[in-house]
Amino acid sequence: PDGTLAVAQQLQDIYGSERIVLKPRAKKLGLGTAYIHGMQYATGNFIIIMDADLSHHPKFIPQFIQRQKSRNFDVVSGTRYAGDGGVNGWDLKRKVISRGANFVTQTLLRPGASDLTGSFRLYKKQVLETLVKACTSKGYVFQMEMIIRARQRGFSIGEVPISFVDRVYGESKLGGNEIVQFVKGLLYLFATT
Amino acid sequence: MTKLTEWLTVLTVLISIWWALYMEMILPQWGRNHPMTVLSLPVVGVALFGLYSVGVIAYRVATFNDCEEAAQELQSQIVEAQADLKKKGFKAK
Picture: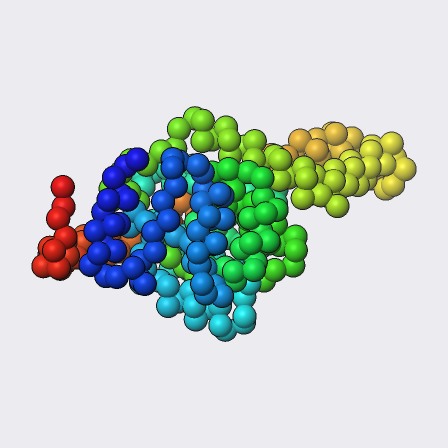
């Protein structure tokens, strides 16, 4: 709906359809099902998930791969909170909310990963399949749940510090509704895992 | 055990210890000599945890890396990419 499909088709014409595979869906159906849909057409043994609005930079991909190889991690998670990781374009209020929410999450869930709501990750294909089937949440909470479920099943999780350049294009959203959903999701995970 | 039951277990243990202290079942001499301390322990505990939390969050906000160079690098790469794509026939709207 936002016109990116047309752009992607042009890119496909330029770079070839062996390199860019497009599988559009009828309408906006949510992130979890998008992962499932995309996985059907993925031919490799590993899947990298990332945002396409330039907040996640492909230059980190080699680092993800290296990290995965170093100890054969099942999941490699990009973190904005550890090492050289960081963010650009956030004001003080946003930073406080982000760190505060992460602190509460760490205290309540002790997940063993520093950045639970990030969505720049590398998964082994089998692991991604297993986890997506096990998750029931949406939005930010879905990303958190993926890591928590990975922990539950004893999957190994590595980390790569990443820089997150917020919303060069498009609008960033962190309204009251997102916060409510986040708290609900957090309590759900707290009480059930 | 879920995280919730873990927390409830730990809290129950802590409250039991405090209750035993209060009822003079453990350390009765000390308890009798410092009644106000015993009563204030739970409050102090919560307050200390609160202070710790605020401190940690404040520290993390202050040390939150602000990736200026990454943003600038990205901007110049966008310009580069737009020029490159235009050469290859990409038509922006």
